Image (cartoon, rainbow, N blue to C red; front, top):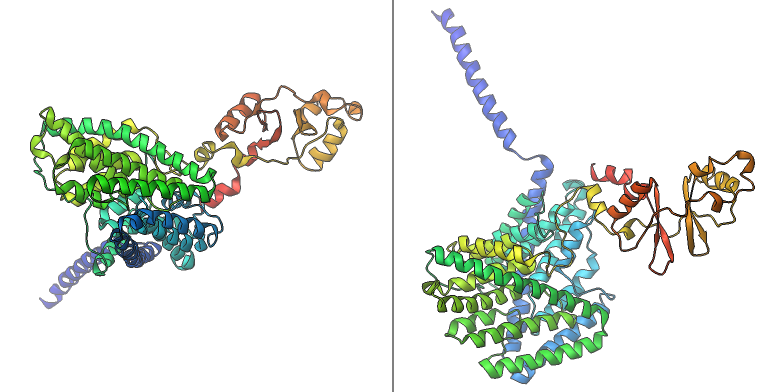
Length: 580
């Protein structure tokens, strides 16, 4: 019996071991790759650091500086933005060496670079500029400096621990840092993730950064709320019946239409303000902007008993909830708040547009809600319309509809998600390609497609190998074709373009005549030429239509600017670098 039981026991042991082995194999398959696990650890550390930093940043800027400004006598509070703009401009031009006041746009531009890069020495002047602008009453938001700081931190970690994390994680940590900055500032971790993934593109999402951004946002939120420096404040302290019917959905569509046009106009004004800041004298811009902001602060104080134009605008929501205001009053606040933001940007102020857009949306939704009540739509849900206005206006202005809806969901407990989705979707259709962010692309593209959609100046060779008109075919063949391995060259008479000379055209001439035949006799004077306003894809089409590997770029005044060649458009080493 004992001998008969031994094989049976051995078989049972083998079955148990096989089962255990399968379980262990399955568990091992769940473990992330080594680089991924390190990346996730780095994302958590990044989020914790960003949360602490943003907490201090918000305390100093909004509670210490802006809180002090709002307690000053009206005349002093009114002229505080002038001082802030002066400090901001002086800092950017001295310590910053003339850098621009952009912050969140820098994150987007860095994201689209082949090797994301933000210069470390630019962080401090931009932070000082942002704190001075916002803390002394400029009508922009703190999320710009928060995003810039977070993305800068992500790049520093990626560069500093390159050997440990791997060489290809700079863009991932850049995105995770931006997500942590938004999540910490608004105490909305899901919003931080979605915003950071949505911001680089108008009609697409960033990829590869979802899980690190989730962890960084969660860590940033936890570290922010764990530090008792700032009070929790909601942009949407509205209470409403979450019951949604057909009337509310119809209202959401109408509100989305209006917010789409409004967001489009707002984005246009922001872009014009940025252009003014770059074109005009800094001193004149600061003085003019400061005086206008002072006038608006006094005007709003006289009208409503409070300078509603100072700061990002959270006090506007408090004003809106105090009592029932006339529609004309809300429209007036909507206008002066928008003008205050445009003036702050045009005068060179540093900050973001998330909160200013959100406030405009709340005001717009309040006005639309009153109008809908007049026609009998949703009279029992008056607090719903400011919430939907925020989702639609913010989504249209920043081209981040998902982030706007998620922000509404996190701020209201999810009661307004369905109509917010409808309002945001409609506003996106109406808004078109406009956006307050200047660096956004339409969507993700591959290497070749992305290069084709870039300006032709990116591949322009301004000083190519060329030949004068008195060059002989013999000289062209021996000096360029054989000596420099050049198959095509432009023929230039000084700075005047005459045509293209090719090896194939020269080969049709009898060798005995090479010494006496000029390149002007064999060149193609009708070869297609391009404009400096073209995209690379236009140059590719022109070269293909003429069967040339080179295209001359000529300015409107017929001045030769350079050439574009096929080998400059797609380089093998670039493809190898991307696919490593």
